[in-house]
Length: 487
Image (cartoon, rainbow, N blue to C red; front, side, top):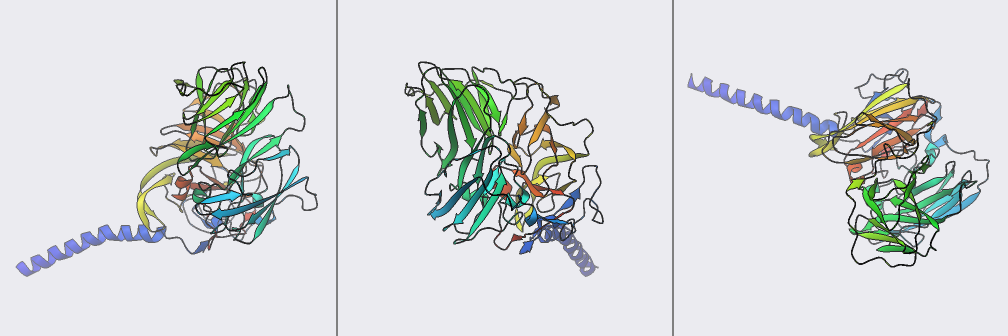
């Protein structure tokens, strides 16, 4: 009896161990990524309540929901090849230790074009290890020009080149950066600003100053320097284009004069009013244009209290002015106007809930980001048809802030925490979603392709905070892995 009892206890112990280990083994095994894979077959289809892709799996199932199907390949979604370029640039990228230079500098050159021009930009990879690409952040380029390795092109290896062709159809402030190993290459300096000037400028002429925010080896800079100065005569207005290339939001405040927020993420605000005594946040990946009329004593613009822009003849004081207590809220800033999009009866409604939990990411144990409760690569593939209006409800329950960026589209902010916008239409491509916050945004599906929708705190993206937006009738042309590592 004692022997039998001992065997029973042993069997029970073995069964309990198996009950514990088998689910862990399954979770580990199912998290492993193949050597190469098609982004269109990742995760599960989320139709947002609209019609789904014909003949594909039901939501929640794995399967080929776009791979090899569709009458348009990603590689064919380009500008008219017969149209000649209006302006051409060559951007040569070089690896120098842990720094990447663009045409010998970092940040790379500011590219200035006029609205409506067709840009032809040739990327030459002189020596960047692991290959590279260029993503045109905020510009609604054709899908094949989006620069995402493994999704819209193959990474460009050292010694090779790639030509990007796209029309700069919206005036505004944008930027370009690597989207191959982006969490590494952007930090190392593969980036620069793109300014699209309006065909017919309105209002009085102003000075124009681009300020690219970037940390090199943990040291904050503006255009690669500790500070930035512009000689401006009293009474002149300056348009200061702030480009945040870092992974976290920047706090900006102005001392010496009021300011106006002229544009957010490349779109002008309607009826911007003067602001004093408030700071404004510039989302990671986002851009904000400030309008400042310079008084006789000059103006000081502080960024996080670590770098400074001075306008006018007076030098910056040695003591950093205190950051104002109140933040400018874009939810009610500016003057209401028709946004040009009807969201009363959208074709799609998507949930994008950000969380965090223990699990495996490609076999690595950790506490990883989740989307709608799922760990990468079992994440949603948001499905739309061309012409759809889509409303996205973004909820952040992860305990950390996330700057969310949808490629290929701009989105209209409808509400935050249930409170609707009451000011100017607030269009974004990079949105700061604080911990516990909820946003509703809307966009028109007017740019066919397969598009990333991810956190622009780029290490977060590398840790799995990535989903995709996919149009019906589009099929993949490239594969992730095998040298294509977008994050």
